[in-house]
Image (cartoon, rainbow, N blue to C red; front, side):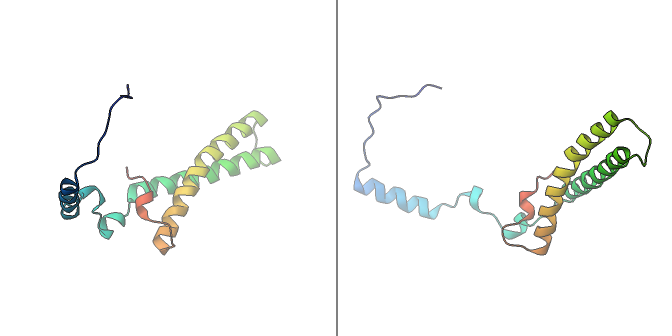
Length: 118
């Protein structure tokens, strides 16, 4: 995208500026007209996905732990693979579940609107 460097801008005359300010005060921008109900809509699918990822990650981490300690048969390379998959599923699941829990509890700074809705 090119920019125009030699454009000369000038201020509006005082009468026009007042009219412009009056019009801006009367109009309400719909982008910023949120109601509390729209902010507190609970994204059930996202919370279900977060809980699924959390429990899947915990199970994969336990499986890798059992393979590492020898309580379960398997190769060490399998344990490393399960460990990586467990970490990749546990972290987003834990984060979104935490946000959902604190939003439900009404903690300051946490809202259901910060969870993506699918």
